Length: 433
Image 1 (cartoon, rainbow, N blue to C red):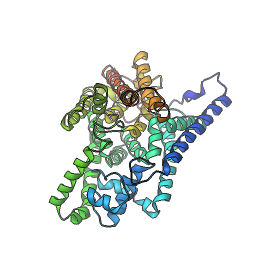
Image 2: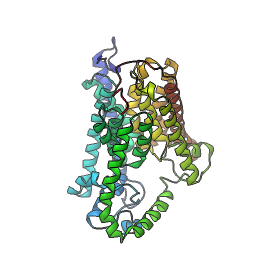
Image 3: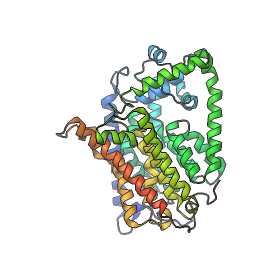
Image 4: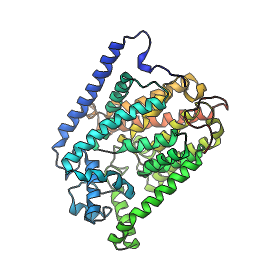
């Protein structure tokens, strides 16, 4: 494998200056996150807002409920027993298993532990993404990329909410880049712990030619969830009552200010982008069809061009398509923008997509990814100072981000469509599995 210097080590630029920029950027990013956390930490955890609410509501107390023999999907019982402000959504029981170790600690120290885990995870994910992007891993490169990830809209929101998005992103990257079927299947399984990641990934990765890892990962995830669901069925009083609980939970979630297309300014998927730009509120069915159209459209292009994707570094473009198709398909919010880390690193390479992509297309794709990741109007301290209405502020924050993702996906699909059937040194296996 040819080793290439990281993009931050361009010849002629003093390395000491790069270190100053990298460390300074990292300190600034951490300071920004720290200020955000301090300002919000003392907020009442029983109301909307505050810090680490996703960790509190979806990760910590859902496990506590299971340990207490309470069905966490039962919205009424969950709110009555625990100091939460959101329902536990219809996530598989494997989600609770993932967060079970935090029950060894009380809530406050557990939330601090989650913050440390996410900080460390960003450093590790940055180093791994550089490796997957065929860059040489150096301390300077890792510090630089980690600082950028922490400062990005996705990174800051992950730290702010206590989300576990980094785990599911790592699962996606493993599924997309592992050379073996077994490792790839593990990646699919991990991503399916959160279906919003796993379902589109499974469809898109199968369309790109990775059939066996998609099937094995999906079957394993379904089997594990079915087994773990048995005690919950018993506590609910049977399958019928549990289905009623699921129905009520889904209705409650659909009306949430974080989910409803009428009230949310947190979503970045295609349906939410269309709703924001055109000031319309599509029905749940219409929103679902929009997401389905994104995934099926991307899958169709990947399937038609799957032979070209098995050549050289061409699968780099497929990785970008899968990540963007996942973001724009099923419901996603700002913390899920951490998905863009590996795609952005891959696009910086001159040999992106086997060197077949035109320079102008690659530049547009890179700019779109960067705008989505670092849209400054998403920073509250900036948007609150703008002399504009709330709708215009949301358009700048959410609309620009969503449109950038749509443009990036369209360009990535065009690059895949134009791929030639030649090349060597594929990032993963060149054989369809």
